[in-house]
Image (cartoon, rainbow, N blue to C red; front, top):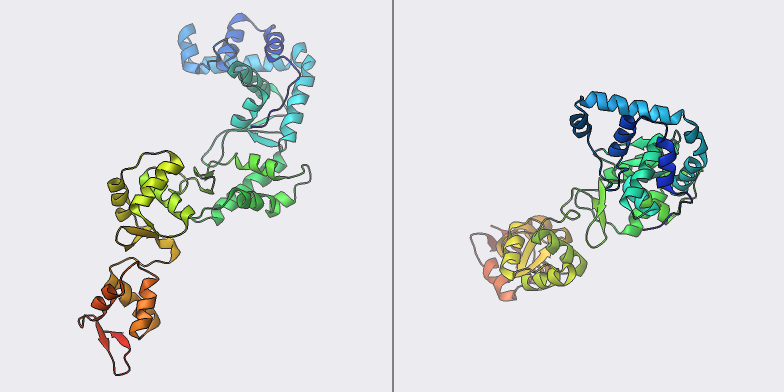
Amino acid sequence: MAKATITFKPKQTTKKLLKGLQDRAQEVIVNRFGLNDEGEHYTLESIGQKYGITRERVRQIENFALNAIKKSDSFHEAEEIFKELKAIIHSLGGVVAESELLPMLSKDQVTQNHIGFYLTLGDDFKEAKEDASFKKRWIVDSSTADKVQKALGDIHTALTHEDLISESEIIDRVVSHGGIIEITTHKVDAEMAGRWLNLSKSLAKNPLGEWGKATSPNVKTRGIKDYAYLVMRRHGSPMHFREVADAIEKTFGKKTHTATCHNELIKDSRFVLVGRGVYALKEWGYTAGVVREVIEQILKKDGPMTKDGIIDKVLKERYLKKNTILVNLMNPKYFKKDKNNLYHLA
């Protein structure tokens, strides 16, 4: 993660900002924002219980205290601090996820809480709360933030539930999006596009670094079958279930029993059994079904064919001996041969 440097001392600054408050108001702010030595944020309810007052009364005290700080001389004396934080957020793209921003500024949780307190106080900072699509984020350029969020939404919409794309490709999609191209307040590069991607909760990358919809099993891996899909997709050709189990362990460090792997592959429609214990991905064009059903689908699609033509087609779908195909083809219940030696569906 990139690191941004601040020139001020947060704890000293906070002490000056709070000095004009009454004791209870000061304590409410300290506990609400985690400015204590433990860095713990207290709820309105827990603070209310301590003082024997309602949650709403605690909220009123908090709001009153924040407004009092903004009117104080100490607040105006801290103007350079707010300018510095604004410049940092602007340099990071005008909008940045809080979960990325604060660790950039300090590894210390308490110091991060102090900076979060300043962002709440400063008039130049807009807090966008976490929602279904985006993480909690801080904005100093609303126009850019709107364009970025629109671009991320469009990229998400354009992906199917099964799609996986490389990190370089998804960054290209961000950079080349019409709305992003319109941005003139920032020089958009891959690093900035990647930081904007980190705002999204609907786009995510899987353990192999490939991007897709966050809800897709190809991204949010939940078990052996999802890991199997990823290793087979990377392998690029059919694999025996024992090979799949070994690849899962080597790639992800997850101990996988071969029998368990076999059972998962059988049950999942993403995989097609193409030989004895050998599986392929359905998306590669392999047809599900027993050998007879594969022959039927070939004849339905391509019409009457010679024996050799059928064998060639089936061998592209299945890892079989030719004799296995011939045994199925000779079943008069399903197939018949005409005077031109072409096979038809019976």
